[in-house]
Amino acid sequence: MGSEEKVQVVKISEEKVFGDFRKKELIAKTLGQYPMDVLFEFPNDKMDLIGMVNPGDLVTIAYNIRSRKVEKEGKDDMYFTSLSGWKVTVE
Image (cartoon, rainbow, N blue to C red):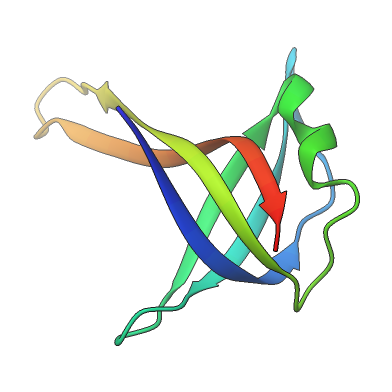
């Protein structure tokens, strides 16, 4: 599932490392009638895409919606959803 969103960059996190997995997170404000802050993840080799992006920049982010299910015995299943960026265009 892929989509694209034009947003204004609010903040970019430092690199986070989880074993072999690395990522940076980009917080952005949507530009529609009801703006909201949204977190996009840029994993592993995609982190370089946001290397030249700064807070305040207007960008278009192409992303995939990813979700995973976590099952714990005796508890309801939980679902975690993320927006995984794969392309960034500075406006």
